Length: 358
Image 1 (cartoon, rainbow, N blue to C red):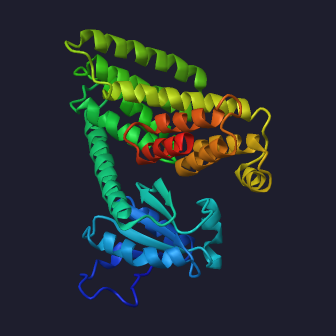
Image 2: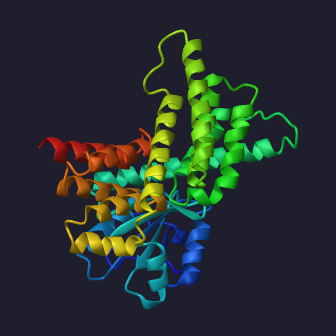
Image 3: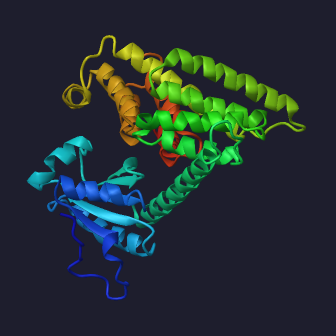
């Protein structure tokens, strides 16, 4: 069952958080309770082990970061060595500790491996709360639109629908709710207040849904339509558009995601190994660069973005010239697909530069 966690030596000056802010996962039932809680507030699942030194160092810092938010976010602790949670560890693909998984809306929406520094952790917690607020805002907009009834005209700002839908689509399990995402993008595109820029961004969102659904032909067609709408938006603009225009950046991101899906489609025709088998191959044979490449793509497909980046960077380290610098291209594609505001993508670019030029 779920139970409150208490620290044996809590900081004396720290206020006592609500009991629901600190939970412990001991079995499938308690995990389901934590997932249910994530429908109300974001929940950080901390996968740890008693023997893990970095886990022990992270624990008080993480608790304090949660406490400082005053109930806006919760912490669920998962000891990976408890026999009853072994299936959960496998299901969540926890390969190392500490691993932090952000749960919101009943799904995992972000993951961070290793022990972040206190400033990094504080920033990550803040972003988790911002993400939750953005999704709630989009969900509220969706409910408002549904109240309009069939044939009704939506009064919801289409940009709110688009922002929330992209947020959900890029979560690790976004592909499972495509049937919920596509109507939002469609509603934004068909909104009478939508201009060419909004239509371009919404069409790019529909293309992303097609990518996640594996319908690459439809994705290509929709992406072409999005580019046409973007060109029209540029022509209508009085001044030159900023390179950071949202519809331009989203089209670039979807184009990269489509390219990665096409790369994966080419790989799976000859590569039959699963992620676990590829991991073993990468560790045991440093010359098996095909395994590193395939592993990165399969991580991306599974929504494990940080692992996808790590594998792509490993490919660069092992042989930067392999297949005409395929590793470098892969890192950049992943970063592009994540969008220009994504922290994992930003870090990937920085690390690639360090490896490439130093």
